[in-house]
Image (cartoon, rainbow, N blue to C red; front, side, top):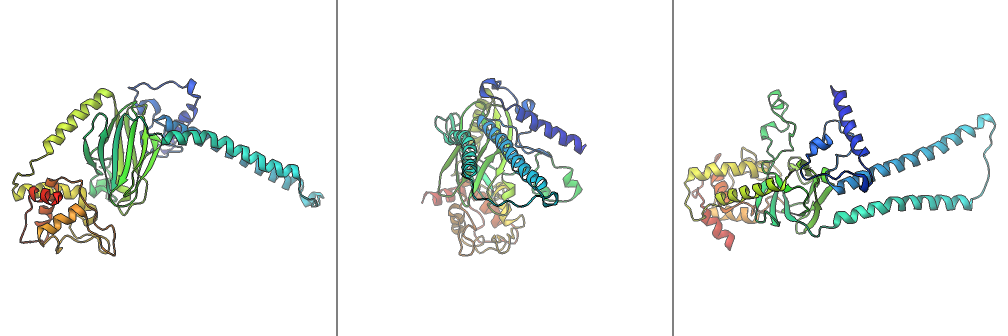
Length: 408
């Protein structure tokens, strides 16, 4: 079974390598071609994968071709150099009567070993430069999306083009109890996208140029989708950008590619490429969903309503650092159970969530959570104040209080 899977993976790699034909000879992908059916690949890492992922964009295809070309050049150089070396050692060995020669430098040889590598480097640099320049050309994008890295999830804002105004967070959706749990009962429940599945996918239309603007809230992250040939750092205080234009529909998976903390392995990236009609329908549905979630900040919530909503926010946003028990991680992340901030005046806790909290020992200990709505912040504060051993005098926070603090 394992041998069959390995051969299948190898065949996919060979099929993609064989498809690296000149541009004029390549069949153009139509808008409705499914990536998996066309390439046999999954859009993410495959078991026993022996090559780069099958490309879904022209840039990724160019990268694949460059990789293949340079591997052949390296192979030729390797065979030539070691062939001459082993031939010389065998043919001119002392046991058959050869004696070491004494000679001075050869101008012809020195010119040859300078000019030949120079020509090889130029031969590799020209197509590579063309691809790198194309990778940096983010002009004339059809849709612009801002991807904000944060510990440990991604926030997306559709800034320009169809879908402008859409905003959401994308969290790992693999249940926490399955993560790293050796129990057989959990192993059996894991699907093929274990640790590479999210609750909110980035959705884009096929055949459209998508510009991704990257930044970060706390530490350096990196937005990467191998099948698109895209990897761009997301740096706090800086704005970087990249782009892709998928020629296939399908679901594509990647990860944060910059070590960003203890949950680095658990912030996957999922992009779903759909037809133009499906994208328009998704945009309409997403905007209606956002409108439904935009609660009136002046509404007065009951404590039970806030606790129920707050538990969901805590599970997706806070549990990685502060743990389900609220105990945090000693020496790294503060405990909320018995915390003087949680048990103190509610204004201080609101301020911490809106603006973050730094300490001399852990500079990025508590990043600001401004991406959460006023209702979400009020709910998660109320939840923490009424959980574990916490019993503060001020045990409930309303969205109006958060809105007023945010406006200051």
